[in-house]
Length: 31
Image 1 (cartoon, rainbow, N blue to C red):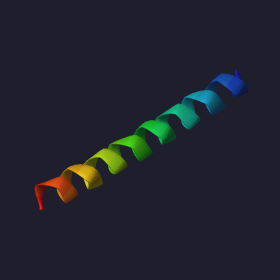
Image 2 (image 1 turned 30 degrees about the vertical axis):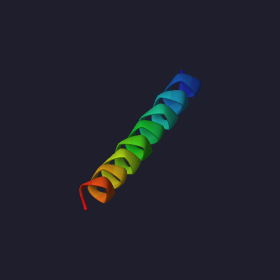
Image 3 (image 1 turned 90 degrees about the vertical axis):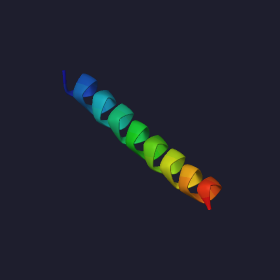
């Protein structure tokens, strides 16, 4: 159970990082 929660947290963190990188890249392209 703990392992599932850990994996879920890691996936959420990776998704958050991807969203931030996409947002930064999008803003860079707009300028």
